[in-house]
Length: 221
Image 1 (cartoon, rainbow, N blue to C red):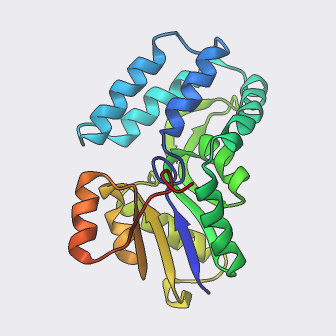
Image 2: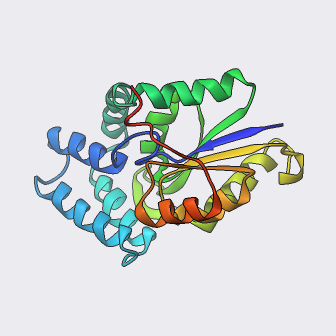
């Protein structure tokens, strides 16, 4: 079996999905007007390696506990339409090329599952993501279930995904992983065919040193 794995933010989409979802909820009056600015401040600290991803998750997802599950489910359903319209054609073609080749495909992202699933649904991909905890009242607590799907734990999540089908890495022939981020180095180094997509400066330098292919899904018409 061959597999193709895809990062989400700044890889298949040229933006941060959490920021877009935050902006969408703010437009519904579900979040304070200054929430997006505070979220972006977290993102900058996160990108610089100065914040724990779990702490960021507590801030963003914990804020949704104020809303009843039915209302949140409705907003998420509406957000799916926005997500589908925002995926670049080049990204859609890339995923389809792998599916046409018979490869088993999955989205592997640090993004919270309920946001990632909106894009995974539009792309027709299995979703491996950070799992949010749901309390006894069916509301998100802000905590994370298991390891976040980040850095070395992306490999952990892929292994668990394979295991659910009774498989291991030994059963995989060729494997691709597309990512923009140096944070994804553990999974990039685990696959047979790593691809740096619109990479950050650190990953670009590493990819050139290793001879990995570089490509853009934004510039491709």
